Image (cartoon, rainbow, N blue to C red; front, side, top):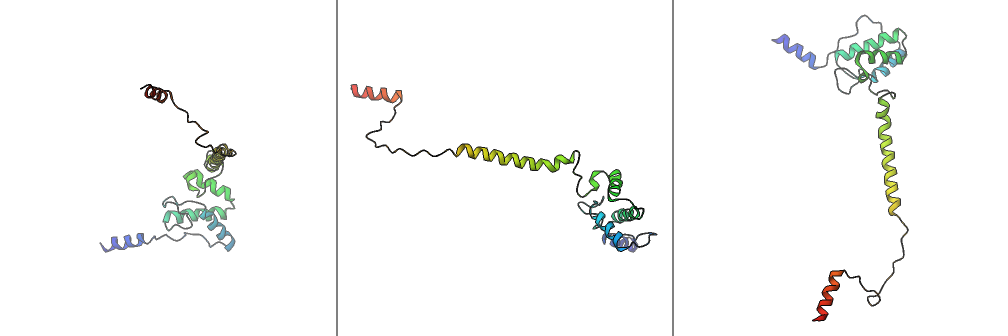
Length: 158
């Protein structure tokens, strides 16, 4: 009972096992590992990078990044490794190519179309104002419709 309680407390604290069998990297390569880790999404956590996640799976993924850096892989090769295993979702910022290009360009295109439509609408309605002609009641005769004219004619006959 006490062992189960201790295990649950340790797991609730976000315990991550230490790296196994790896020598510490020099500061430059460790900074590169952290930079790459900030660009890769944790498979367990929602919206958290593997560099910031306390999950043990994220620690294992970060160790894999270290391993790939030691092997001399480029950043793109490391990203391709994680995309091949976890899909495009593994990247914190999707690539700007292929289908995802529409996700990057689409909002800008819709904004440009919206601005153009608003501009067209306002330019149509903004016709030059005509000077108002003030007419006196004596000079202007209101237009009458047929029914009103017949009613007046009938009233005058009586």
